[in-house]
Length: 310
Length: 288
Image 1 (cartoon, rainbow over the protein chains, first blue to last red):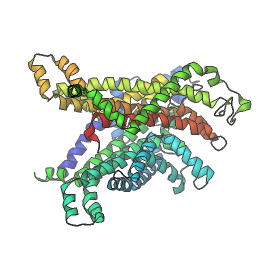
Image 2 (cartoon, helix red, strand yellow):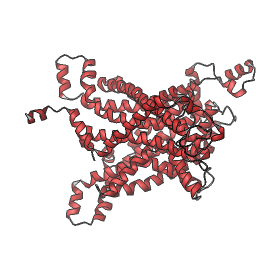
Image 3 (cartoon, one colour):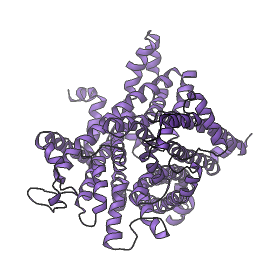
Image 4 (cartoon, chains in turn cyan, red):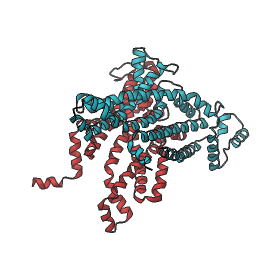
C-alpha cells in the first residue's frame, strides 16, 4: 500500500513542474514591464530600467524560470507589484475563505447527490427518478453566477434570511456553497445512480434477495458499500471543480477569497500575484486529485490486492 | 425486398432512429433550431443602434411595446441586446469546439497511433495541461492576452485541447488493434492513410458526443469570463456581461438578470440534451 502511495506522490512531481512551466510561460507573455507597472506612468525611464534589471526582467527566459522555481521551493512567490507584500502572505490571508467555501459546497453536494442518486437508482424508471435526472440537467446548464444571483434575489432580498455579500459569518457561506453545490452536483448524482444500478444487477445482490434479506439491508449493507467506490472518486474530482468554481462564486457574493484575489490581480496587472494565485490553485487541484487517487487505493480492494501480493 | 433493404441500413440511419425515439433529445434539437432561427433573424432585424443607444432618462423601464423586456441601467433596450448577444455565444461555442477538437484530434491520434516515445512525450505534456482546471487556465490566458471575443475564444479553446486529445488517444488505441486495420496494413496502406482514412472515422462517435457537450460547456465558460469582466467588452452585449451589469440593481429591476441568465441556461441545456441524446444513440450500451 505504501508503495502505491509513494508511486503516486512521485508521479505528482513532474506534473507540478509542468504546471509551473506552463503558467510561468503564459505569464511571461504578459505585456508591460514590471518596473513601469510598479513605479507608475510618471516614473523616469532610467528608474524603470533599473528596477527591471533588479527584478531580472532582462534575464533569459530559462534563467527567470529557474530562479522562480528555486524561489517557490522555499515558499517565496515574489512580492505583489501593488502592495509590495509577499504573494504567499496575500494568498494565505485569502485561503480560509476559499477552502471553507469549497469544503462546505462539497458537503452540501454530497449530502444531496448521494441520497438522491441512491433513491433514483432504487426506484429506477419512477417519476422520482426522472424528476431527479431532469433537475440535474437543469442545474448543470445553469451558470453558477446566475443561480447565485437568483438565490440572493429570493433568500436575501425577498425573504431576507441570508446576507447578500461578504464572508464574515457562517451565514454568509450558506448561499455561495449552495450555489456551487447545486451547479456541480449532477456529476456525483449521475455517478451514484449509475454505479448503484450497476451493483444492483450483480449476482451477489440477487443471492442476498433470494435468501430473503429485506430491501433495506440489501441496499444499505450489500449494495451501497460497493457502489460508493466510484462515487468517492467522483466526489474527490468534483472537489477540484468546486475549487475552480469558487472563482466565479466569490465574485457573485463579494467574498474575499482566492478568486477575488485573482480577479484583482488581473485588473491591476499584478503579474507576481496573478502567477502565484493561479499556481496555488492549480497545485491545490493536483494535490486533491492525488488524495483522491490514494484514497481510491484504500477503498478499492482490487488496487489494494495488487500491491499487497508483492 | 423489405428484408434486403433493412440489411442495407447504414449505421447513421440506426443512430438517427435511436435519436428520434429519445424525446428529451428531440426537444433539445428543437430548442437549438429555435435558437439558430432567432440568432439568424437577429442579424437582419436587430439594429445595432438600438443595442447600444443609451437613454438615461428611461433607465430601468418596465416592459412596454417599445421595450418588450424593459430597459437596463443605461436605458438600453434589453430585448434587442438579448437577441443580439445570441450570435456571440453561438459563435464562441462552435469556434472553441472546432479549434480544440482539431488540435486535440491531431495530438491524440498521433500519440495513440505511433505510440512509443512520441506517445510518451505528447501525453506527459497533455497530463500537465489536464492538471490545470479549465476555468483557471482560460482566465490565465485571457489575463495575458487581454479581453475581447477573439482572445476569449482562443483561451477557452486552448484550455479544452487536452481533454479531446486524451479521449482521441484512448479511442485510437482500441481501434488500432482491430482486424480491419491489420488488413489495411497487409494490403500496403501507408501509416497516414491508415490513421486518417481507416482509424479516424471509427473514433468519430465519442468525439461527436464530447463536442456537442463541449459547446455547452464553452458557452458557460465564455459567459463566466465575460461576467468577470474578462470577455466581451462593453458596449457590445453578452449574456454574462449583461448579468454583471444587472446585478447591482437586482432589487429595483431584476428582469435583466433573469432573462440574461435564462438565455445562457437555455442554450447550454439545449446542447446538453442533444449531446446526451447523441451519446445514447451512438452507443446504446452506454445507457446505464
